[in-house]
Length: 259
Image 1 (cartoon, rainbow, N blue to C red):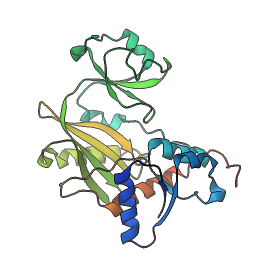
Image 2: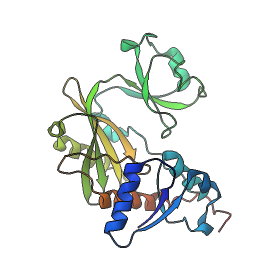
Image 3: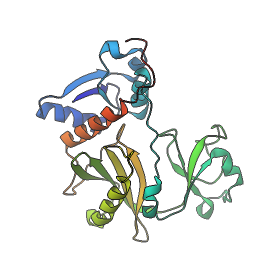
Image 4: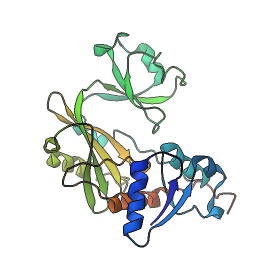
């Protein structure tokens, strides 16, 4: 396995896991570049075949430099709709002008998330004047979701031959119903285009319901540790990221001019 580590100060948990895997296992190679260096790097510099580890912007820049098509995996695949437990619909930023939102918040708030990964952080908004929304083109694709109060959240890592759990925020590990989790995993894996590695985030609501929060692709994927017996170890995280990168890097849209 080969990894391209972002040298900027960021993503320390994720980079530390890759470095630990490198220290403990033979056959793992590391290189480092800053975000600013990526646009001038290419296959001739030897970064082809190295899975990027860093921010979304860093990974996206590596894909662009290598003429790799960014995967367009939805946060809410249709096969996982039964696990969402709330109404979610696709729309555009301009639709906020016509939503029945209370400018004072609460009942009128909607959770808005971009369809393009990390264009902005998903958040509760009450109208189109929100600071993260107001300067976006009206045609920007987004997801609209009714408000749900999550009191605990987990990330379930699905990798080749490995399923592991991480937790962000507070909450008891035993509240995560692994039977429900496995049902969701089996459901999405029926999709012939399902990636080899991905993550499913689950949340426990203030009403005691366990719902799927979203599905995430295994690039620029945050690593969360937990006391759960199935926590993700460093080597498994490395294998997860690298396996998915092999799939992604096969999607070359043009031959880089540097080759």
